[in-house]
Image 1 (cartoon, one colour):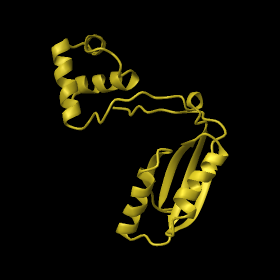
Image 2 (image 1 turned 180 degrees about the vertical axis):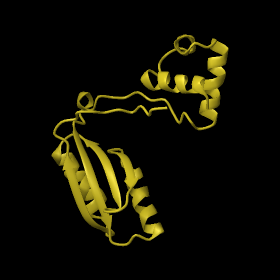
Image 3 (image 1 turned 120 degrees about the vertical axis):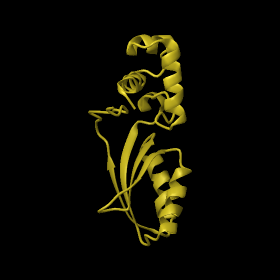
Image 4 (image 1 turned 30 degrees about the vertical axis):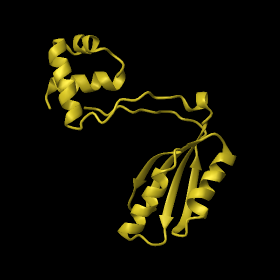
Length: 150
């Protein structure tokens, strides 16, 4: 990865809806060069996907929860089982295995507290291997960024 690739990645992270011609002009390369490099970045997995970032409060999902989960049994198959469970839940935006401390930290986006309670019942209360759940509810988001410095 060279400086041109870095400029392309930075420009796409700011606005992935740019046309190839706009992107090429922004990073100071020809459109064919830009197109070839973006294709190579996709094929190599550096660019995983391009998405739209939605304002949660505009679509009825205004409650953000950060949830720590500790399991009773931390065997690899039990950890994978829990990951599969949360992967199937649309309200779970992110799931991280962490250490030390709890086994997982989840980022959850739901409409309100009743929606969180329903999710907690589906994922945690009815799951026999969940030992402890500790949830933190966001009262204000002071920073949200998806861009990775390259």
